[in-house]
Image: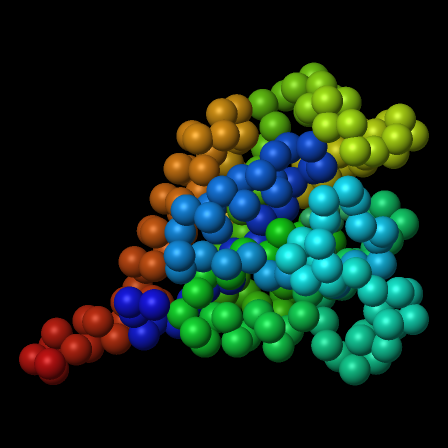
Amino acid sequence: MTTSQKGNVFIISAASGTGKTTLVTRLVNHNDNIRVSISHTTRAPRENEQHGKHYYFVTREQFSSLIEQSAFLEHAEVFGNFYGTSSAALTEMCEQGYDVILEIDVQGAEQVRKAMPEAISIFILPPSMAVLEERLRNRQTDSKEVIARRLSEAEQEIQHAFAFDYIVTNRDLVQAESDLLHIFKANRLNLANQRTAVEKVLQNQ
Ligand code: 5GP
């Protein structure tokens, strides 16, 4: 890292099929100072998903035990599976100066906002419900029943967008990635993150 500045936490939520994971992967691959927090989940791995890279895949018993140990900053049940964000890993990455993305659902976002009011929240919006439906069908990773359930839940999830700090519409991947990066960069320049810089100038250091 080129800076001793502490990193910030960015919550990124979206209805499934909006392209959130693709956008987050691109941001992380293109920016050395941005990392994504790896969640724990009780969901079964999809094809090509690796333990420790996409998720930490755990049993329900292991997940319950982590809750008992207060290991999670937030946790939620989404589509019948449990998901949680580890507090320790998150704090460590921020201390090291990385901006850390929490790619979590709207319930998790609400919990993190309460526990960490300084976190910045971004909701990724599909261009329309029709486009979202088409993207979910093209993904072909989930069964028809799962797609139908996710579509009906998508509208409810989008209702939560009003509670977020920023809204980015994923009409075009490159444009949406650029919009996200602008939010990250602007946040590094806010007073809370630049206070020390101002003080140094005033102290002639
Ligand atoms: P998927 O199973 O498709 O990877 O994720 C389903 C949903 O769970 C997505 O909205 C995803 O953002 C959310 N999710 C993934 N990890 C976490 C987490 O640690 N906490 C919460 N609250 N939601 C998560």
